[in-house]
Length: 421
Image 1: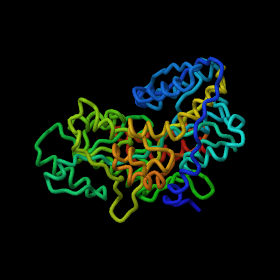
Image 2 (image 1 turned 45 degrees about the vertical axis):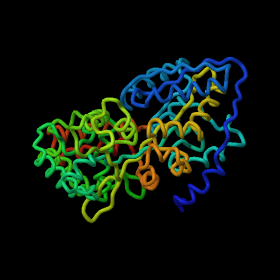
Image 3 (image 1 turned 90 degrees about the vertical axis):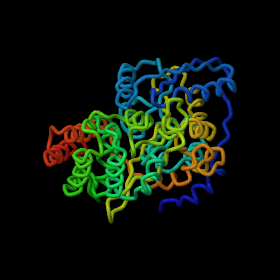
Image 4 (image 1 turned 120 degrees about the horizontal axis):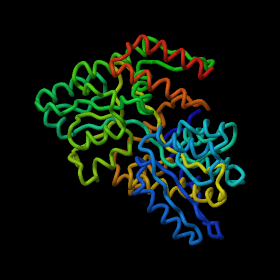
């Protein structure tokens, strides 16, 4: 039985562990994160750790604006067994891959008797994602899910409520676009480029239409009717002019930037976007943004894609004990709260969803926890890069108009059967 939201919140305080500094000798650590993961926010957190641990010096390396680019770099470093990195962030879909490749140092022996207590403080889906074949291969950094952002000022001006269905969204977007008469105003933006985000762009309406990727025995089984409905909806957004014609070129941060510039009515994006909309100096929408769970099809149930990032220790680090100690700090209550307040990263520790300081900055976190708890996971597999490439390239081909949905569905199923057999 899954724990209730109330139970998770109630148990958060009891399971939270106080951080205690342990390294005594001088240690030089190198931490790698992506450019989209707010190095300006992570750096002060690392500085805080250094102040509490005078013998530790931490260098922050930043690279790769997308999950794919970060993965390419880490694959190069770790395949060569290079000890240049000690700690790095990995996407929630990748722990099984890193465990199979032997790239992530198992953490169980370092945690000792505290192993179960450490895992118990996290939202279950993240604790489970980081345990592969019984071993802890990473610890959660922050949770994530996709939400619908909207221009609250435009909806109010034109008499629309935040949509609860995709049909309502299409109606509102078209009406506001027509009334505004601005050729640069997009009704909806989402991720159509051949990146990880395109997997969720397809899976959200596919799941919402009742589709699953595998049957009860774990065999690949694409629901053709659900896939056609999902692709039909996405193509309708293009053909109606609600999304721009070149949506197949739009990445995650493109959606964020275009909404932030005031050129989008509705945007599907991750939690990090809220902080950028409200605090970036160049934001044209600060104070005029609303956020709600993703809509459903009429008569259906809403679905969202779970995301999030995990702190892992390199199996080739020369400073593993110090690296594990740093990861325990970064993944603990202090680290999770810092990221929530300063980057609107969803907490991995449930009690923080009721923290007054967190809610003051992110009032919408009050409804975010149930969304995260009900979010669905992309396939977990040591061969996830191939799974990801299969889905996102087929989705991108359909959105770019170079492949018909029927052919994409057939090819997607055939390729997934080879990868996930």
